[in-house]
Structures are given as structure tokens and as C-alpha cells.
Image 1 (cartoon, rainbow over the protein chains, first blue to last red):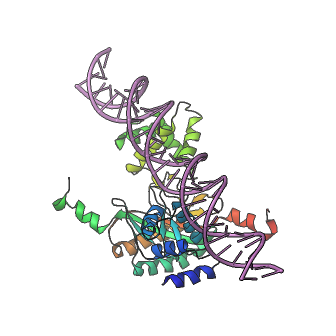
Image 2: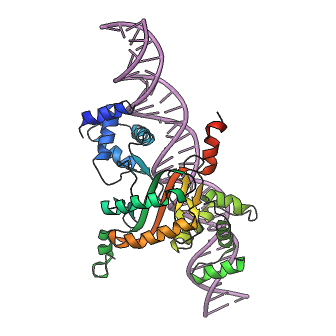
Image 3: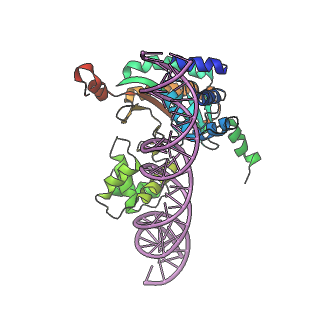
Length: 150
Length: 150
DNA sequence: TACTAAATAGGAATTATTACTATGATATCC
DNA sequence: GGATATCATAGTAATAATTCCTATTTAGTA
């Protein structure tokens, strides 16, 4: 998605496509790392030196309210952001902190589950986040008894 | 569960059962409101005036690490705590902020789903939180066109 | 009862996020 | 196309949840 495309898309949903916003959106879309506001700030700043962290927070909130991206609640109380607007699940490593999307196949299962549960839940659902916590494969191997650090 | 029972249980898992800790644990177990540290502090303080908020934070962390309770990540970046240690799902109202446990029947479905997904996920899972966001029934009725506030 | 290790509480420090505001850019209306 | 109103940016300061530090107290143990 080119910057022009992003620009048009933002205008379509009623968000004024400033250069900062386009760059912030582009940065978030270009990664699967679920970055923090700070990380996005650092990434965009390199080719946008005057950028303010406030602008990043403001843009992320604007995008979230428009449903273009989503805010992820993290136990460390530092928000992360996800460029994929459709509901999907996550795996969070409780050792290194990385946040991974679940594999597409798993997400398909979860979608089926949504339909199954929809009318068993009190209240009108507008979003969901199936979250798994554990040790990612990399941390698992680093923690292996044959590969202990300390 | 009496205070004596709590005391013994804490000792069993290697946590020194001080009066503060017992009262904090009791307060959290006695509610389904998923309170914040601050809320627990206020609740316990009434019959424990010398209590420090630090002690509440410390106790909650200790209990969480021991697997007795769980910490819930919230989008507002204010942690809430859940006295039920077993994995279960939540419904979060995006209007009033309340956090409800899912009905037992739904949790049963989710347990079955866990088994189904277990070996389709990379990494070793140690916990999960199926989270639905939406409007609780009370907020829905308050927002109804026949009952509009403003 | 004395000893040791850990818990408490108070204050200070940290830090993610928000609020405020002057300046600058963009869009709208004529 | 120019004047004007609206909105975005960026800087600073404010807010507030959580953590850090430390002297004092308490609980468990010999």
C-alpha cells in the first residue's frame, strides 16, 4: 500500500491525511511486531525528525476510534498497537514480551467459535481478543537445560 | 473460606500469611468485580487503617506469581485483579468499564476449544484470556433511543 | 526468648499517557 | 484565488499508576 493509497484511504474514512499520520500508519502496517507508541515514534522519527510523540499518540487514538487499527492491552500497562483491524488472536511471550499473531488456521477456528458463542454471551459484542500467554519457541530453546544462560 | 483457612493456604504455598495479605486475599476473593489495586486498597483500609498501597501492590504481585490470582491487562493501562486462578474468559464493557466473567456454559465451550487448539499454536501455553469487548446489557438499555440521557 | 529473614509503610522516583496552548497547515466559503 | 475557520502539530507541563528505596516492624525458628 503506497503512501498515496494510504492518503486516499484516510480521507475516505474522514481522517485528514497529514504526512505524519500517513507515515505513522505506514509504519504500523509495515510490521507484525505490535509496537508501542514509543517504538513507532522512533521508527518514524528517522525520516521525520520534527515528529512529536504526542502526534503519535493522537494519530493512534484517531485510527483506533475509526477502526483502522487496534490497541492491545498488555499486562505491563504499556499499550501496543496492531495494524490488523479484524478481530484475531494473539500469543504473548511472558519471558521476552513479544506478541505474535496466531496462525491463520487457528484464527479460522476461532471465527467458527465466535458464531457458536455469539448468543450465549450477555451484552452486544463489538470486538474480541483471544489471548494466549506462554513461552515462545525461541525462549523455550534458550531456557532448555542444554542451553542454559545462567 | 475463613481467615484461618486463607492463612493456612498461603503458608502451604510458601507465602507468609501476614494479616495484611490475608485481608487483601479475602477482599479479592469476596468480589466478582475484578477490582484495581486502588479499589482493593480502599476496601481493606476500612478495617485495616494503617495499610499501605504499596503493600497491596506487593501482595497482589506475590499472589499472582504463585498462581493464586491473576492480573488482567486493561486498555486503560490500569491493572485489575481476578481472584479466580483458573483460565476463563471475560466480557469488558467499553462504555462503563465493568469486567464480567463469562457464563460457566461459555467457559466450558472455551475449555473444549483449548484442547482443539493446543498443538496448533507455536510456543508453550501457560495461560489464556478470551476477551470480548462490547456493551453490557445495562449500558445497552441506557443507550436505547427510548431512554437517551443527553 | 533471641535471632534472622522477610514484610510493611512512608516518601520519593519513574514513566506512560494526557492536557494545554501557540503556531502552522489545510480546507471551505465567498 | 484570497480570507477565514478548523484542525493538526509539537513543545512543555501535568497527571497518575506503579515501582524503588529504606527504616522499622513482624513472623518464623532455634
